[in-house]
Length: 69
Image (cartoon, rainbow, N blue to C red; front, side):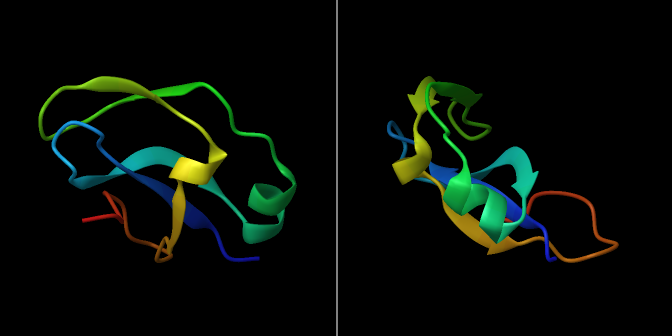
């Protein structure tokens, strides 16, 4: 199964960023993601994000680095 990057949009600066979390689509659908803290790499804001805040972006195989630019 393909791995996806879980991306969020910062509540302060409104820029998307890679949360660093990776999972397949089935696990995402079944999982409970609540009260996950992430720090925005753009403005430094630390916020709590829930499952509804994440978007999935395909994480290309063999490539490291953020997938949510």
